[in-house]
Amino acid sequence: MQIVIIGSGNVAYHMAKAFTKNGISPIHIFGRNEKELSRISEELHIPYSTDHLKDADLYIICVSDNSVEEVSKMITKENCLVAHTSGSLPKEVLTGSYRKASFYPLQTFSKSKELDYGKIPFFIETENEEDKKLLFELASQVSSNVMESDHEKRKYIHLTAVFACNFVNHLFSRAKEISDSQEIPFDYFLPLIDETVQKIHEIEPKQAQTGPAVRNDLRILQLHEQLIKDEESLEIYKTMNHSIQKMYEL
Image 1 (tube, rainbow, N blue to C red):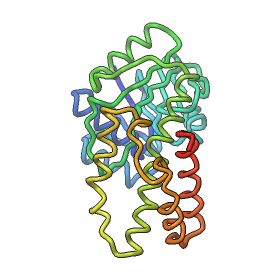
Image 2 (cartoon, rainbow, N blue to C red):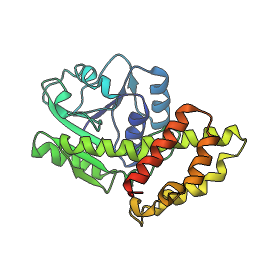
Image 3 (tube, rainbow, N blue to C red):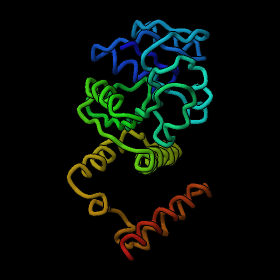
């Protein structure tokens, strides 16, 4: 099967790398950012282009959600299979006389961070059983965790991922701003962060909650509020504590 990957960002890079590491060689990678495409091509030995989209059996679109529909219009080959990697878009956003699918990897991707692709959940949606079998077989060569999911379920998977990953990482960034302001190395907090994440492998998140809000320690909460000088960070602190207290009916 001839595979073309469309995109030059984090998802495109990791999809290309996941395939090549597992003996699947995309014939082409296509995108707008020649500098990034060149880097991917040099590392993974995949030909690239910014102006010519090769014929293929399968096109995997790895671009931002806002660009998926526009990019899909560039594929003019009929009766090929085209899949996007978005967690929030329906497969019907793809436009063209081809078979449509979703090929969603549930992970946060950064080019500088190595990943264990075998643990990444892949969620597949297709228009027919034959294509479902094809994409299941492809994803199963990369990961041991491949499932079917329609758009309705996938929207909630993506929403959960935003809470569990994007919001949490933003709090890490806010926490680092505080530690930096007091010249406290953020490395001090990495064992705490690691334990927090590891703990929910064994304990339900609600049961694992600790801290002054769940203890209803008003003295500490007020002290912390006095220490926070940035209004936006103070609002986040109050909102998070209120949410914790409400969850535990404190």
